[in-house]
Length: 266
Image (cartoon, rainbow, N blue to C red; front, side):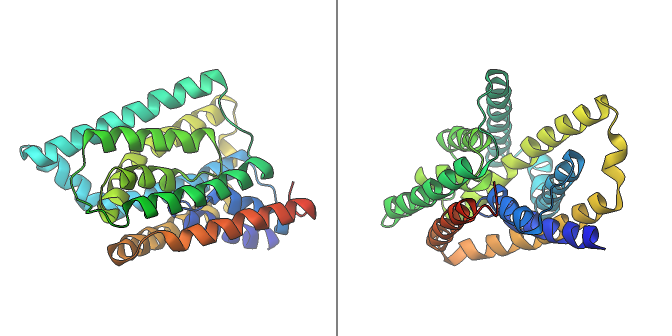
């Protein structure tokens, strides 16, 4: 029973935090430390795939509209920029992996990245406070979003969605459009990353670990809660800025440090 409870809790945490501009990795470290629960690679892969499925479901009509409306110059332009941003992210990710440019998912770098990320959000919001933002995605935004996602891949705790959205916002894209474009780029990027991880598991004969009741439970919970989280964020950014997440990240970063000192997490 404890394993099922842990699966539900971890699925909730992953689903709620994956697409918010906070550190989903930091949250999972805290929860795993408190639960004294360390899951298999298959479990961790499935709870990361759940949120990707969720965000795809949220945007499926918009995505379908991009493809069916390819004759429209604006939609065709956005589709091309999405494709280029995805390719830049993928190529950069492969290069980073080959070069070993990735910090370990341990408390210290994640706590530091969480605190720095809070500062970056504050600076971006201050920079754009008196500026008129627009809804038009430019090539600069497309490239910046790709680099934002790469930064999150290299520095765990940065937040993939947070880095990508802030990159777009810093270049003048309005918050709702920045969230939408960043999430749309994230869909193929995260699916590709998940597929690569699944292939690695299949290659070493660990496919059975993907179908345990605990892993499937966490996947379902993560999918549902991620859907709720994305829908909520899309409504939130219609009228609010990201400053509340600044204070949240500062609190989370300090909490990680306290838990490290007290040896609750390592």
